[in-house]
Amino acid sequence: MPWFKVCYLSGLQTSMTRTREEHVEAASLQEALRKFSDWPIEVRYNCTSAWAKNPGTSLYVVEAWEAEFADPPRK
Image 1 (cartoon, helix red, strand yellow):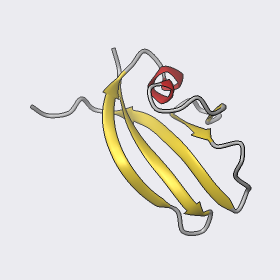
Image 2 (cartoon, rainbow, N blue to C red):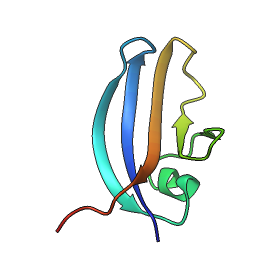
Image 3 (cartoon, rainbow, N blue to C red):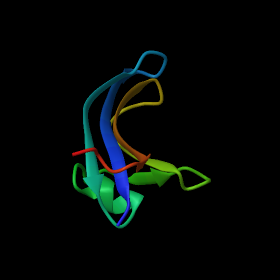
């Protein structure tokens, strides 16, 4: 099963802050994001990343969870 890096993004679109970064194992980008949020998911056109954006935020102020493919964490 693939690994994903999932992080929380918030703030102004021009200066977002990434926090709470975790590596999770999941079958898909959507499944990885569902472990953190029930917000609507948008997948990037080339399917390498996705985000679950809070529908209550605007285009300028963002609150979202982002997932992208990653290597498994080292032990």
